[in-house]
Length: 498
Image (cartoon, rainbow, N blue to C red; front, side, top):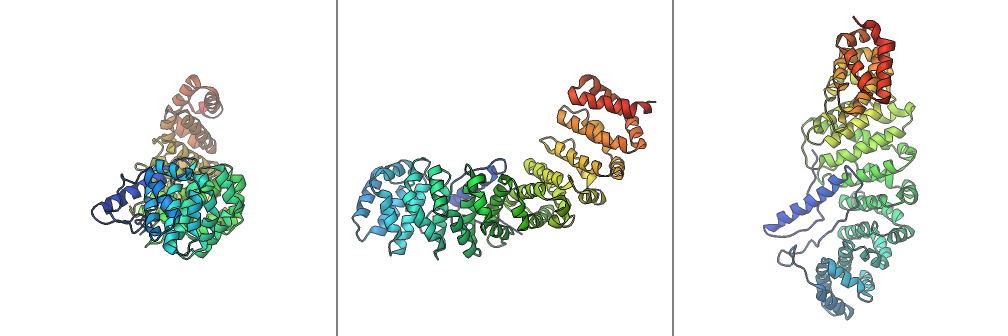
């Protein structure tokens, strides 16, 4: 159904190494996106000239520092070979040492800025390619050197050329996290309104949309973004446009949706109050997409990169649920299909992507925390037995599952009786023996709710040998666990001893 296509703006070469180089670059992009699952990640992107031939460039040989000096000298003195010299310079600037040499040359960046305003379209394209190579530099002092060009790069975001616009966007995205001075200058020059306008005008051009998403995600991960950047983003049209891109395009692939989903994740996780996003339908849209993704995964869809979209969408929904007023939950989330999707995602990723399974369980916890409707759906749709079977799993999955079961038990006495009938008591007898003390504490909490719900439940627990388990905790446990076990024994269970 959906696939992560070869990104169309990446390197284009001929011969046998073409596919090899593409695969290496795609694997690098995939690694960067995967790292985001566990932490925020500021990364850089490098676009190469589409017309580069295999004989013109290899990945491990580039012109040296002296070539940069010579090429700058030639460009300063104009001449008919300006375009060729610019192309050679862009290749030379892939060498980190050559990048340092270039920015130290007098008026070198201003030379590129001047060429950005040239009447020759190819010269403008090669000039921005040179700036883009500089933006990819590992040296922290290169980004500030590019500042004279930023106002032009922002202006050209409204240009007609997709390739040129992409280069401008990725260049801006590369330099903005490197230096606070650069970030402040870009904000003062209006990068947020420029990105909003670009996305609004180019919303049907998914290559540009992906580039906007990348640049915005770089900004959203910078220091003080919650104070200086997110309010500006929320006041713009960007959130609505990000939401409109979430549904993947079958022909173009997942990449634009992935970038936009990560932007929304950074917005929802950094904002103290997500009412603005809720009012724009963020929870409705993300929940609907999650239902579709859950269905695709349940049907065995193994499209490359699908999990890279599932992760940020899960986090968006989880964060938005936390901010959503209880009375508006049903309206915002819709029907119970989301519960089915979340349970399906937990099961699907349990062995292959346990971190994603935990994320899905966390969202299900947030969904059931304040809703009897969704707790009831878990029971009615017979999804609880599958959750109980997950209690032996570690990596934080079992604790989250136990919290979900606690949410159900807390809602109604009849839910407690149903949980008992589905085998939760025997499962608790196993979790009470676990080394994980958090699991033991949670098990005691759930057990208390079950026991007080019905004398029959209490008697059943005793019949299953539960007293000895609590006595072991009473004598060997510490603090709260000991007190809880003692309270359960003395107040609710000892009278059922045979």
